[in-house]
Image (cartoon, rainbow, N blue to C red; front, side):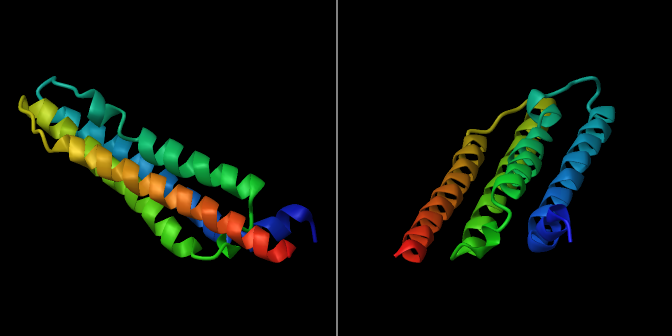
Length: 143
């Protein structure tokens, strides 16, 4: 069996996650285009660039994880960190969409910054906890 086949079997969860994020990115692009049709010629950078959160934060990050750490799901408490990270990406996408809707409507809200702060915190907590658990697990396996 080739190395690629073993890697695909071992890290199927990462590949599914990348596919889901790719579909979410496509949905964000379609959502922006459809919303722009009803926006009376007004565009928002937050709405137009909303697809970058799942593309960069989801597809590219999980692709790099798949390439360099295919057995990432073997780390203790992986699922908790995975859920925190994914929740952070979703909060950033929703916050960007909401800010885009407000921009197109010609109004603003002081609460949209809370989405960006919370989403960034979720992502940071997920990444830091994953990294700490991975280092802790490596330390226990060496001794």
